[in-house]
Length: 181
Ligand code: NI
Image (cartoon, rainbow, N blue to C red; front, side, top):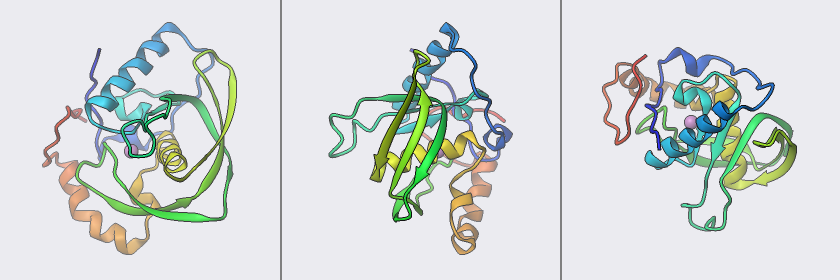
């Protein structure tokens, strides 16, 4: 088991677009395992590659700990692409392991369709809704260099400014290791 320090707001890698993976190697499989370990250690429900310093297009999701999702099967998505987003949206509070102690309401499509590769390099497609759709969209955002503050209106963004500056200066307490910039 390997716990990797998590990159936080201010770290440039979070603003970089990740690269698609051409072929999945044993090294990727190890990285994916470490991502699951790191996410669970931080009590997260999703984690994207650039949050642990990797530059390739991978994220992991595990909702098992959430009420109503006890039967959820942990999932890894490689090279994900969002194929469809419903016009219907939903507003719900979101957090992010790279934005410690920030909780903010974000409006996102209620339903999506996503395409990705599994760890056997098989192309998969799935439809997701509610929390599952939200987490996929949040993690997908990470892979394209976007974070929660990019998904809220300017008024909310303004309110977040001070807290974001604190995170940048690492004036934060977390119960999981965070990375140096
Ligand atoms: Ni996040």
